[in-house]
Length: 94
Image (tube, rainbow, N blue to C red; front, side, top):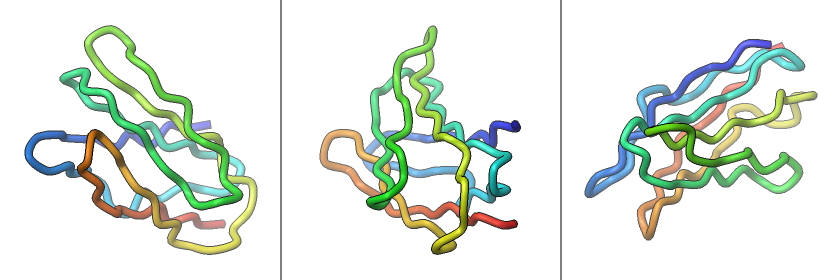
């Protein structure tokens, strides 16, 4: 399985460098990384497992499970850190 890295920048706003994230069914995982170590969370729609998040060295990382089926694509998700919440997407392809 491949990790699709998404850089998360948190300042006065939150931005991601890849929108949408393209994942292949049963193959890829999304890996959101903040290089400055600022904590954040990823909120996926109901029915998708919550990504595992935590500090790893000087980075803060959230990693999704592989998506097992395509019910809706793209998948809207939210990045949260404090009160800031943009709405990027994940595009799942067969």
